[in-house]
Length: 364
Image (cartoon, rainbow, N blue to C red; front, side, top):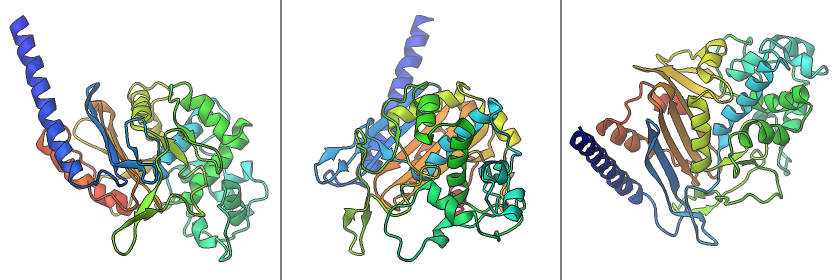
């Protein structure tokens, strides 16, 4: 019996080492040591199969990327904003059926009476994209409060609330404001006290201009010549509800464990209440900050994050205890996801049923 256990242990170690070498080779081929890069984490059945960083978190100071480096999550932040709403709903501080007028009495009456929290959480509100309402002379970064000001007097929407899917940063900026209204707390205070601190995500934070961020990755983008240039902020990158979380591989692993262990709430049960089957797709829904679909064994959760200086991917399959994380401090750097997926499939680690290319395209 002991010989059998030892043999299986050695086989698992050999498999893990083989996978690590293959993924190392793939990632190293796509990054220069003195340039911005990426961090990748793969977990299965409670074990880390891979965790490493490549390239520089800050090209000016030549600070290397590590598992503790904090990346800007962009739209991966939406799952944290949604989590705040779930917690408040569980505490009877709000209802998914509440409309916008409950929280914003001066919102346009026709629009505000029809749009409910469940529509914001599934991108089915039809509310206008705030990016289209930004004045041409806007120079200062926008806040979630600014987004509310842009939207509250608008008398039209793209479509009737609940009728179809259209990805909306506006909706999640409004959710940030709703968290503050329902909790009576500043959003940063609430998310820290109710998510980051209970889960011991000590290095995770929300971006606020002028406030230092520990172990921060700076963002970059390629210019027309293909050279990486500094591209960390834009006028739309200070809104909190749709994209301001900073976290690391180490801290995101804690968030993943909370999801699969139902530490704060049961994500799969919550999705049974708030979810929308996306039109023109075969197996993609959206709810509560997650693209999701049903695979062979379990609900599959997925999201990307794209902004002026970052490209991120997270994928969780609770029933398989699977996690894949890809954080990059380079804009438009999602191309590596496909070969990583192919390697996971070849190595029989994960074979997802979600159409990832389609899901990414739905965020544009």
